[in-house]
Amino acid sequence: MENFLWTVGMEIAPEDGKSRIFLTMVYALITVIDDVYDVYGTLDELELFTDVVERWDINAIQRLPDYMKIYYHALYNSINEMAFDTLKEQGINVIPFLKKLWTDLCKAYLLEAKWYYIGYTPTLQEYIDNAWISIGGSLVLAHSYLVNDHITEEGLHSIQENYSDIVYRSSLIIRLANDLGTSSYELKRGDILKSIQCYMHESGVSEEEAREHIRKLIDSTWKKINEDQMAKLPFPRKFIEIIKNIARVSLLMYQNGDGHGIGNEETKDRVLSLFVHPIFLPK
Image (cartoon, rainbow, N blue to C red; front, top):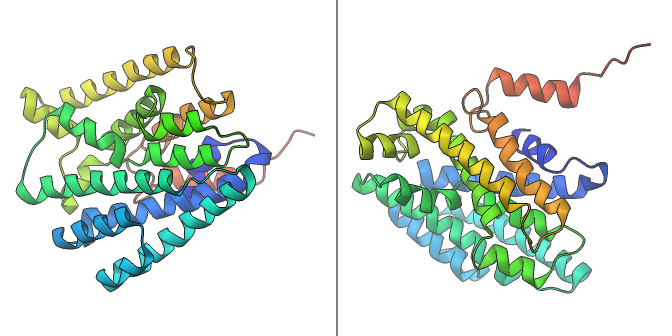
């Protein structure tokens, strides 16, 4: 349900139901693969899985351990089905585009796993350069763009080759909001250091000072997004709103801790209020 909550905040129009259903699946795929890289996989298994994703060949599935075979099969079939729909409806082959995006995500996860295994603490900027991809925001936005009615080669190129500034900044906000809400729990279970710890290590400040620095970084990034949307962008206005909305939802999801990965009472109450409890109108 948390996966669906993200999509409702991103695409709010009644006619976007099909897109919300598909993006919920994308969020579920990302959530599972994130846990595989963070918790379950050995480094050798993760390197193998990353290679198989980059090959994008169903025959390579035999090289994977059983639990990865199930996931890869689901990923391969789901993404190929979406690509087929895009080809049928808009005449554009997006398999190379999607393959690169999922490979980028896996490589970002793999780098974080390597940092964890060797006990390496990156600088804040080094962390950000990788973590804005590993949060998966740009990947979700790319899939959202593909289910729009009017995709263009220019728009695809902007996302795939250089990740438009507004996509980068929206993803950065998601990452930093995630770090503020989840870092304490994830460090306890055994995970890589987050932006807060990287800044503490780099600058010698307290955790609260580091958290304040991250909050200010979120604020400054929002201001840049406001500037970006005034520039000429290769995206329709509706998609630009989606780019901003996903960042807004991240602030909601991580406002009171990890409202996505482990859930909390606030997220539960929001889900019940939005999807279950009736809305009483004055008579």
